[in-house]
Length: 409
Image 1 (tube, rainbow, N blue to C red):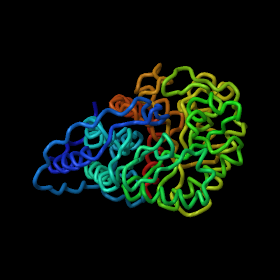
Image 2 (image 1 turned 45 degrees about the horizontal axis):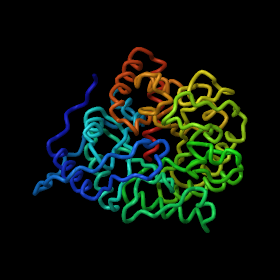
Image 3 (image 1 turned 90 degrees about the horizontal axis):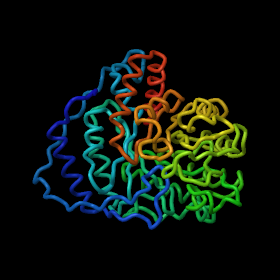
């Protein structure tokens, strides 16, 4: 198994202190209904009792970056393990054990963490957690910190300093949604969060409003027509961008027609959506609206449902046919991230390593292992092994790592 250098004692001491403080302020309760993807559908574990804090806080040494490249290559001097690490984002529970995530960031070059569960900690304590993991990373680019702050039942950060964001169906009735989303984005930025895996851009037919298990049932959709979804989701995304937070348009090519949740059910298939469907058009229009002004570029999340009219054999995140739509039909050259592929029942027929390789081979840049970070070791190993044996795949790793690295700028 490929490994990076061991974490320093000073950094571990800082991390231990920060996590002790955060744990004392975190609530482990979750909503009465299970949280939809990409967070786990199981309630977060209860918070452990806090342990005594050290009396002094050593300052961790700064990691030494590779030498700058005279050609300006952002990956110059990076090892294969560092490049592969940028392609995996793992869950960082806001309550419960974080040992796996700590090791993955410190020793395996994982370049992104996803705050998962439910937290009632205030802004300062969430920021302390984010900063502690950034200090733990030995890599030449800052660790990306993401969370899921859509609104309604999908809202990880619920403590002081974070607004009680309504679900999307209610957001569209708010005056000045973009301005309010800017406020919500500033709250995330103050807490050290770089990426919000929101807004939902799924188009749900009116007759499936409640039967649509992952979206309509939780009131995560911005309406039932393409213009309404584009208007609401673009306002949310533009508000985040104005605050310096990266929005994520999800779940391409749309989860509005399925009646089962890919987190908890296998074989979830949309038999209707085509490559020229209105649900795909929503993403085309959203990217046009959210790419014309200043601010961080949005990401696109690809679902793990199967789309029988596009590729009946593979989940969308593993399908070159689906991901090529993002690149070609949408004309998008930014970061493409999978929905969770660590614990989702939809992808359990593939081993964790197979999932990661299939996603990157299809054209995804970032593999999300939010619900079960322990799956990441096998994912990282498989990506390294395939890149060492397949030059064409290694080139895909380089391209994906460059896109993820560029997202920080």
